Structure formats: structure tokens, C-alpha cells
Figure 1 (tube, one colour):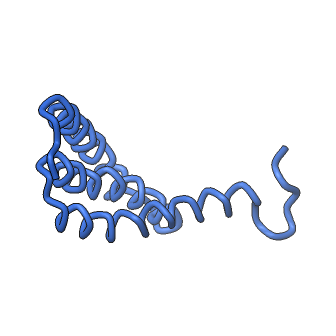
Figure 2 (cartoon, helix red, strand yellow; figure 1 turned 180 degrees about the vertical axis):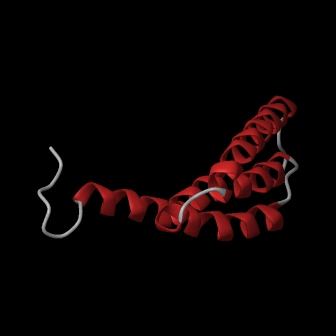
Figure 3 (spheres, helix red, strand yellow; figure 1 turned 45 degrees about the vertical axis):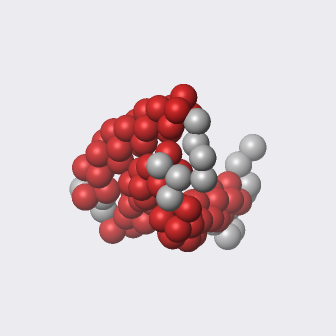
Length: 97
């Protein structure tokens, strides 16, 4: 893959920002209580796995990018499932307005 120089710098900046978000999300994930652990760890895993994916894309490493997407895809899908289920509410409760 041939990545233009400007796009490479933008991707490197995005990877740095994702790293900062991952570090900030690690402490709440480590301190989360048992009922809220999954959401906290998903909030950490999203940017943490996104860093190598973005770096692989920046440097044009297609196999590493695809391997990272194989991990990032289920994380994002599970976050989507959790959000949809949270909007529906628990059985027996009225739906949020």
C-alpha cells in the first residue's frame, strides 16, 4: 500500500490520540465493579486495539492491519450490541422515552 506522507502523519496523530484515550480508560477498567466490568473493558479495548490498527494502516502493513481488524471488529460489534440492549431496557421495565 502506498500511503501519502500527509495521511501518514495524520494517522500517526490519530494513533497517539487513541493511545491517550486507552491510558485514560485503563484506570476505570481496573477499578470497575463486577456488574460494570464489561463496559469498562470494552471502553479500554476499543482505543487500545485501535492503536496498532492505525499504525499498521499508517505504515502500509496490510497483514497487520487485517489481523488488528479481526480483533477490533468483534470489540466494536459487542459495543454496538451492548448499546442496543441498554436502550431497550430490562424486561418488565418501560422503554426509555
